[in-house]
Length: 333
Image 1 (tube, rainbow, N blue to C red):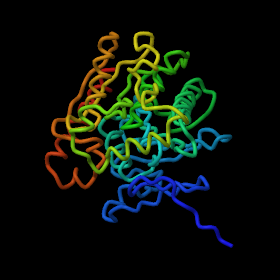
Image 2 (spheres, rainbow, N blue to C red; image 1 turned 60 degrees about the vertical axis):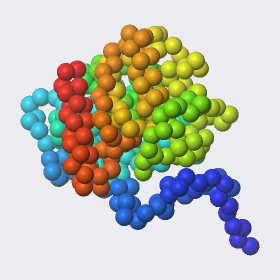
Image 3 (tube, rainbow, N blue to C red; image 1 turned 90 degrees about the vertical axis):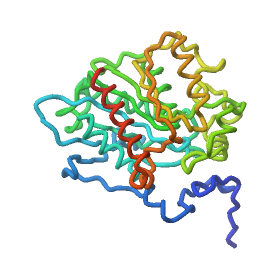
């Protein structure tokens, strides 16, 4: 007798959790946007000036990264941008089309090697699993810098003295968490040169004014915030947890953290604008080196929306501005 599985939790379009603990991430929203979540296969040859390779960095755990190598003058070493994808810790993959378009572009524009981590997802792997994966990737880069392991694209072309963390949405939370963990370790000869949190998923248990008043977007609804975090945070924890509220009372004091210079990127129509701004103000008060890049009139993760970037000149212009700001930040650190 076949027992019907029952859905016990659902995030519209994105994810269904069943009573046996299994998870279905088949896209069930509008079919015309499905292409953005389609995987792009790796290619060792240069396409539009970038080659892409998937590498298993830890044979035991199977943890993988995707490497984007730009076709540039090989006479000097390239900075590394270590990327943590978004998706509320519950969805998305490093090989999704929307990341492929942005990170091939950033690799070209910055003249940098992008390394994107295939993070483990909740609820099968609740936090701190994603933080552990992000930090493991940084340790792997450190072992390459020491000559402890080998990956030719990185060993031959990377400047391990200029490693930047970048992440979008929940991946931006990981930028803060991984940088804070790295501040307590000796990763030399690798040097963490900077961090770029883009539209971080910083929240509090109590809704902010911007959560109540800003427009919900295809990439962020209040339902997504609530459901994803309920599936991702350690059981029994609220949104005041340090990973989602690093400026809150439950988190280690910002003053005591050893952090690299940060470029905090925010969109001024983001649902999470208030808590992102609060993080910036708390970092400033703690005398941390943090710059602000604001995209006016834009919503959460706007630059990942390939349809809007292609169809709307304003979204395209704001995406150009975001990429330019990130490239300038990398060049000066």
